[in-house]
Length: 314
Ligand SMILES: Nc1ncnc2c1ncn2[C@@H]1O[C@H](COP(=O)(O)OP(=O)(O)OP(=O)(O)O)[C@@H](O)[C@H]1O
Ligand SMILES: [Mg+2]
Image 1 (cartoon, rainbow, N blue to C red):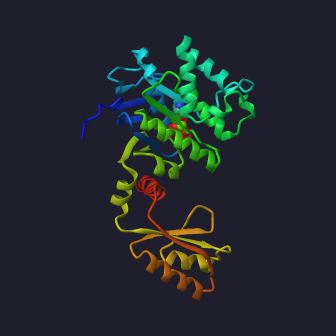
Image 2 (image 1 turned 120 degrees about the horizontal axis):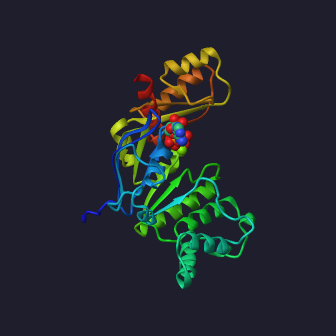
Image 3 (image 1 turned 180 degrees about the vertical axis):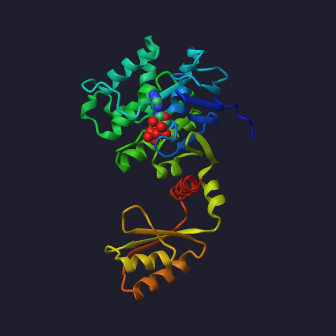
């Protein structure tokens, strides 16, 4: 295999706000053609790290380099990256093409190259059929994709997306994911910050968990899940009615745990379908009819809970 040189490198990166260190010694490297999802609870330091990578914030310790250059002290290397903001940052009344022409000029693309860049970006983000439609008349999914198009006009080699699909419906998210994969396939390195673990699972070549400013786990999602849970399967039980106190005790004694405030319970067990069958009869004997019992491979959600539990244990 040919070694691909990383486009992004962080070594022992630290950021403090006053006396408070919120990014604490993070190493991270990202190569062309790779999608990396940065995960972690609120306040973990994800956006701060992104700001430092973009050269908008100075590291208080360690190193960040974009193609071997420091984005803080050598601003010209910031041309290598494109940042997709969380909010739609487009001119509402202007068409898709008009918007992209404005953003292209802002990122230094001019003359005949501009028209070509706009067409390429529209093609990659699959918005060509809305070229002459004002942004305000577009669906959320199209707006998200134009938002990405605006960030790739200068052909960045690293694309960073901070929460690109918050509040977006499933169809729109899948369309955005498809665009991100296409960009990856053209050799762009993609760093995506997301709370959406299902999205990260389906999209990322590698994920990294940030917790209290430190990277606590990193790797390909399926590998991490396999390492953490081995042969265990996740068993999900959906109750059709509110569990009473006795029912709750029964669920807990069977090894099930409630997911949030819902009537969805889950457990990890190597017994898989056999365990699911045993739980089904146990619940029925107690007069608790489950609406649904599912058996599936553990997910990033399970891993995330595990990492969050470490915090409580620490
Ligand atoms: N400008 C600032 N000045 C002081 N503290 C800040 C500043 N920006 C962020 N923080 C603090 O730094 C910590 C990390 O914040 P950051 O926004 O990087 O987290 P995050 O992982 O992006 O969270 P979220 O998932 O909520 O977006 C938080 O405790 C936050 O309150
Ligand atoms: Mg954030």
